[in-house]
Each structure stands twice: as structure tokens, then as C-alpha cells.
Amino acid sequence: MKKIKIVHFVNGMNNGGVESVILNYFSNMDISKYDLHIVTQGNNDDKCIKKFENLGFKVHIVTRKKESLIKNIKEIYHILKSNNFDILHTHMTVTNLFPLMLGWLVGIKVRISHSHLAIKDMNLMDKIYCKLAIIFTTHKFACGIEAAKTLFNKSMNDVILLKNAINLEKFEYNQKMREQTRKQLDINNELVLCNIGRLTEQKNQMFLIEIMKQLMNYNYNVKLLIIGVGELEQQLKQKVIECKLEDKVYFLGTCDDIEKIYQCADLFLLPSLKEGLPLVCIEAQTSGLKTIVSDNVTSEVKITPIIEYLPIVDKSVWVKKILDLKSSYERKNYKEEIRENGYDIKIEAKRLDNLYKKMLEEKK
Image 1: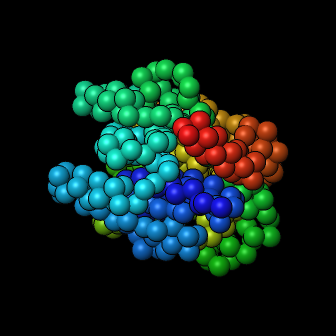
Image 2: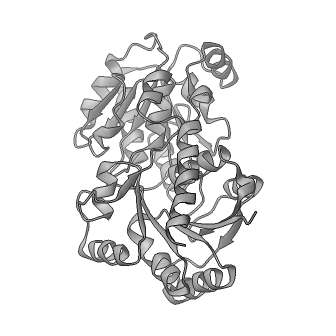
């Protein structure tokens, strides 16, 4: 039986949400049916690349558009022209245009534009990219309604919603794991805050460090765990030193056992400037972890009563909410609620597998 040859496009490979979504889906599919490729054109983490290679992906690294748009296009064209792909699946939202156009040029029959980001106020150039991308798109995917509206001109026509599904059993609340992880991290009675995401301007971790500085005015016994890597890592670490928070803020880098972080924490914080439908919020809620997100995050992610939205214009509101939190609140298992809302990866992976096959049949 001929394998389905598919190529995915991502901005970079840094254990971010998009990379996790792709890994989650293909880890729960029969990949013996697929010849898997992924093209990355941004900052890359060796550990993340290894995860994809271990799963069976061939990783292609091309020149970043910022360095040379011409070289980027030439290298992508060469990869597409020389591999005879059946499916091209783009995950870069606004810049999906470039591989989609090149995929059309070399004759790839199924070209998927996948939106992972909800942007409230796009600039003119981004709007142009989005409109042009539709011309070369055969199928439209989005992680949520707001993300779909961003990329597909506020139209839901023919858009397939593919949830950022997870392994529910892996993330459900586990008291024993919580106790073990807190012991390993030398955490006793402290209130533990956590943030998981790329260290970029979009994720706004600087906001959290400034909140921690204010919390110190209350003599509060609190720690902040920041998990992720990115271009702002050194800048954020320098800010921690300037605020004299070295014993309060910990950078844990990339983490293979991310479920342990959710278990040991008392509060998950996501002050993002923009998001699609953040996978981390689904994971946090599944583990029963109270969650505070910025009002830039779509309301679609509110599945349980333990998530709350706050504006990021006023840090004192966040500080007050943290001070009001009782570190000993009773954790509850929300696995079934998450499953009922379509986030069970075992179910959704089968759906994606069938979608790929159906799309190819339609294009024969």
C-alpha cells in the first residue's frame, strides 16, 4: 500500500503549541501509513527536532524569510518539487501563503491552510497575505472559531475545526505526582505559579516578572516557574536579576514531563498579547489547575469554572487575584468535561486520519 506523503510547515521548532499539536496527533495515528516531513524556518531547539525525528518525521531546515526571502522560497520550492508530496499542511497562520503558493505551483493536490492564531488587529500586509493564501488553499483548518475568522476573512464557510486535543489520562490530576514533583523541586508551603510557552513578546512573560516584583511587597511566599525557550530568554533572566528575584523565579527550559509541572503548581498564568486556542489552557484545566489568562485569549478555551480572564492593562488586578488564592484549594478532575468538548486526542486523531484520506479521494 502506497504511503501518504505529507509535509507540514511551521515557523520554528521550540516545543511550542503548534509543535505539540502536531506531535499529539501523529503520536496517536498509525504512522506506518504516512511518509512524514516537516519544514521549519525559524529558531529551532535540538530536543524538539529529535522528538519529531523519533516519531518518524524527516526534518527540513530552510533559511528564515527575515534573512533572505529569495533563499527561503528557493529552498522550499526545491523540497516540494523533489519530493512529490500528496498533502501540504501549513501551520504558520498569516505566512501560510508562501508554501501554499509554491505547493500549487508544483502541483500538490491537497493544500491545507491551518490557523492557530487569533489576531484582533491585523496590519494591512497581514490582511493581504491572508486573502492571497485563500486562492491557493484547497482545505481550511482552524483550532477555533476566532482563529478561523483571523485567517479566512471572518468566514466559516468550509472551515474544519480541529481541536488542540491532548492525552487526557496523561494530564488528569494526580495527587501522588504532585507531592513527588514538589519534593523534587524543593517546594514546601510556597504558592507555586507557572507559565508554559515560548519566551517571546507574544507570550508576555515580562508581565509575570513585574507581578512577582509587586508580590514581594506583601512578603508573599510564592515561586514562579517559567517553562520554555525563546529569543527573550536572556532579557527575561536579566529582568529577574534586576528585580532581585533569583530565588523566586525559575527558568526550567524545555520540559519532557510537562504534566508534572501542572500537578505541582497552584496557579497557571497566561498573560498573552495574542493567542489562537492555547493548548496549555486545555492541559491546565484537565489537571484541575486554576488558570488566569489575559482577555486577549479566546473565550472558547473556557471549558471549566476554574479559568478566569483578566485585562493586562492593570497588574494590580492580577496581584490581588493571586493574593486571594488559597494554595490549598481542592483540586478536581475535569477529564470528562474536557472530553465532552472534543479534546480527546484518541478520538480526534482518528478524525484527522480519515480527513486526510477523504481529501485525497476527492482530488483523484
